[in-house]
Image (cartoon, rainbow, N blue to C red; front, side, top):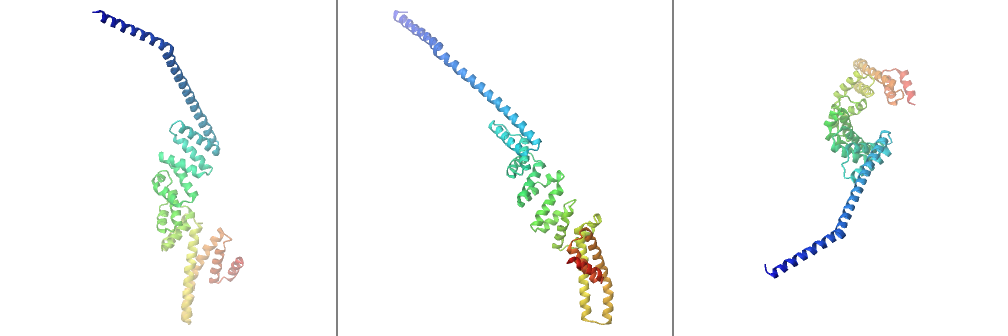
Length: 327
């Protein structure tokens, strides 16, 4: 190894030594403090993050507890406010909102008749969980808002769910009312016949449908059957009374017109015979209107029909009594 080469190695070693010494000094005096500062900042940030996370979780628990307490105490206005705060906390923390939280918020809004808010929450709940409870509230909200098309759609789209939960008659009754009010008699007729235990209040409308559809025989038979199970069914009793009176009156006028065209001893004899027959119908109508009047004594319509029956039956004192009641 020549002298030049040796010198190069010595110089290279010297500079390496100087670099290491300088690095050690920089590391101790500059780099290490910076690393420690970064570690310290990271540690503080982690502590702050843990603190805020714990604080946020604590706030969630406290708000949920307060909301539940207000809800169980039927303080629905306060409950709704708290549940909405709770829902916002869930969103702020990037957490999924539990279905029961949204359900209680919706029910609270429903109870205080804040239907717009209730509808929003209950619709979300129903989409997530096809349960009859939110559906029934959504149906009622549609009824309260007067939205017949929305109400009809809700019921028709979930008829099976309603039936499965014992609400089949409710569904068909609502559809009957909607279609009857729209004048869709054929569909309303079908709805009514799908109701297993129809309310007595619907019977009068059902009779109107039968008459509109020219189903008089079915109307009469329906009234007879209704009175077998409830002899005070006003709609059925009134329909039969009016029908019997109308038939008697038409018959009476027809026979009188026939007699007046050809008055003689023979035609008079036939008239007397037919008057006895028609009197049976007038008495039948009278008896029904008397029963109706027992139920509703001040009903002028019943009194007027009774007066006419008594006039045809030539019971003048009773006819005069009815006439006085009409004045």
